[in-house]
Amino acid sequence: MTGLNAGDSFPEGVTFTYVPPTGDLDVTACGLGVKYDASKEFKDKKVVLVAVPGAFTPTCQEQHVTSYLANLDKLRAKGVDSIIFIASNDHWVMSAWGKANGVKDDSILFMADDGLAFSKSIGWTKGDRALRYAIIVDHGKVIYADVDDVPRSIAKTGAEGVMAKL
Amino acid sequence: MADSVQHISSSNDFSSLLSSTMYVIADFYADWCGPCRAIAPAYAQLAKTHSIPNYLAFAKVNVDTVQAVAQEYKVTAMPTFLFFKDGKQVAVNGAAMIQGADVRNLTNAAEKMGRLAKEKATLGTGSR
Image (cartoon, rainbow over all chains, first blue to last red; front, side):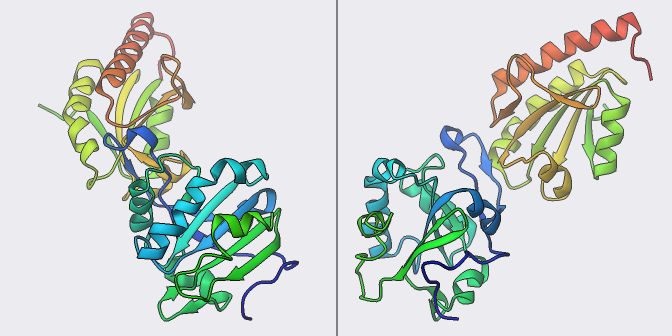
């Protein structure tokens, strides 16, 4: 199976690992890796799932995350409950990436696609990194899924591109 | 001097403590967590000052070695301090839990529970 298509049901059994944000407690508390049952959570939410080749890598950092940070209110206004970034990095790196971007709450969640399991299951990987893709899941149904295959482009998976599909 | 803190090694251990002791404060920590190590001496001191056998116990739960208990109480930030009365989770001073190495609030909570436990112990109610 290559990719997901609008109209598909989001697959069962998809889990990610992440460190729940500790907000302002940052220096007085340590986060703990928790399993996030994506298949279950996506059933009653509108979620934007964004995969990037790597935390802290240039395009991902300079453009991708920043585009979502800049458009948080607009995305919420369109009914988006969760924005989740995943990559092949482990949950500690993803957690640090979130903090590096000043995200202290759950406005954007940063999770590990453990072993690239999910990305591999939909065939959207290149080597040992995920492709740059975005999937909108609305209460269990995929309403948009696409890949940015032009290097350094976030036309299809950046906040603006995704908002046009909401 | 004996360690006044109850080190929990399993879910059974924790349930036993909850059913044998009226008030329990539990410190969910990890060895690799700096803030947990920082607050440990204060916690041990509070345990020494306020513990009353059967009435108030200070427990420590290592989230890595006793994962089941950490997951049961959905602990995601360490240290997290939870409070129990008669085996059920309760709020103390309006807080359902204390997250982070907050010595001031932890001390206030321990003192409050210490007072409650002492009252009960003196009255001799709830003896097990």
